[in-house]
Length: 241
Image (cartoon, rainbow, N blue to C red; front, side, top):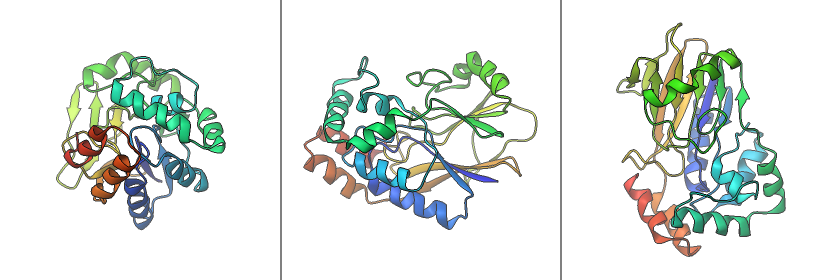
């Protein structure tokens, strides 16, 4: 079965729509979202509506939790705080209710999906050393693969180091090692590549593929400026950082 793994949409409908179109072109069986549907960018309701309408299983992200009032923005920097408070004001009641009901983890048998670290959506896993304290979670879930988001940076990590896909974004997972895999961000990439990112996990061939999709960055940035969100949020989209 082929799963498309999307994460960190961050209210960027201009990135989400072409990503979902590419997923459809690829004939993917199931799409899963690792959370942070909202925050930072200017189209939170449009993104939430699209995921809801398509019935895409979605994890609760830290920005989602703040935007819907489940949590307060402790530790948010001023830019993230400004966007989070704006999002609280513009979200529809239906989307607030939907966000509040999102789970912290979902187990799909061959892999488990979370937002940040297992059991803590505010924690960042940037390196293979970061995943080591969380290996127990895979044993609990009876899975070899944990899909993670939150850092906005693609990564493939196992107990013995970090791995890099080939030139086509492909990486064979084999049959034995445990992996934590980050598919990058749809709506606000931070790996110096402004193209939207998502992953494809083929559970039959044990193959992961990182996919990049170009989208109208200028249009998304213009929406941020029009909404009077911090201009830094518009500028960073073209930089991919």
